[in-house]
Structure formats: C-alpha cells, structure tokens
Length: 196
Image (cartoon, rainbow, N blue to C red; front, side, top):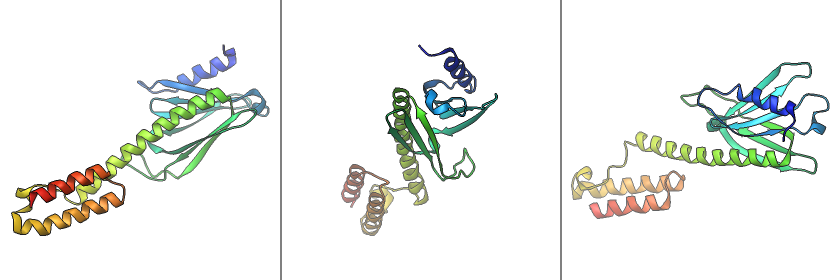
C-alpha cells in the first residue's frame, strides 16, 4: 500500500492525461533521493511518458516524451534505487516540429517500479522502431514510383529484362539498407524472374 502522499501525486499525474489516455505504470522516486526536493513521479501512459517534478514550495513541472519520439530506453539498477534514461529522436514529422535530441534521466526510482516503467518503454520503443521502418520503406517505394512487378508492367519480355534488372538492383539496395527483409527480397526476385 502506498503512502497517501504518493497516491495524491499519482492522482495528480492522472489528472494530466488527455481524454482516452490511460496510465499503464508509474514509478516514484525513493525518499532518500528526494532530500533537497519533493519526490518525482514518472508514468508510462498509452501515448507517452510523463514526469511530474514537484517544487519544494508547491507547484510542479511536467516533462513528457511521446512514444514515437523515443529512440532508446536504458535502465541502471543500483543498490539504493534505479535510473531510467530515455533518449529522444532528433527528427521532425507531420505531427511535431523539429525536436532536439536529448535525454531525460529519472534517478532514484524504486527498483520494481523502475523495471516496470522500463519494460513499458522498451515495448513502445520496439513497436515504434518497426513502424518507422515500415514508414521509411513505404516512402522509399513511393519515391521510386513503387516496384511494378509482372510482365504487363515490364512492357514485354524484351523491354522487361532491362527493367527487371533495374528493379532487382533497386530491391537489392533496399535490402542492403535494411528497408526490406530477406524474405521480401526473395519474393521480389522470384516475381521478377518469373515475369521474364
């Protein structure tokens, strides 16, 4: 059972959530690490990480990081507490302005709670890494005009052999850059060869 003070801060954290957002897990700073300030509470929600840093004489400051901006999550567990460090991407997308790369470090968290927070961050990091890979692949395909596979798209056998070679080279480049998997490359190669 949590102390009433911690429960009040977690409720304050819940009050910062936007409609439809849920608080999945949270971690509180251990008392020993909060000697010169009031305790920090960090929460992993369905859309972001939110940290509530309360002032010594009242008030609070909020820091947050959207899951799609998360590049890396690290956990360092010590004898007295744990530190979760989150690194942000240095990129912009349609949903955000240019964001400077940086790190948020949450020190002195309770170990079990920090591990739960870290697991949530790792799951989101992996999910968004895959989403970015798929998006990059789609953008590359769109820029290249897409891979038209099949005899009709190649314009016949004579013109098709030159076009097929170019498409196979493009697919090989995509494989080398990690934009497609080996299985996708083999499927493209098989379709190109069968279309000749």
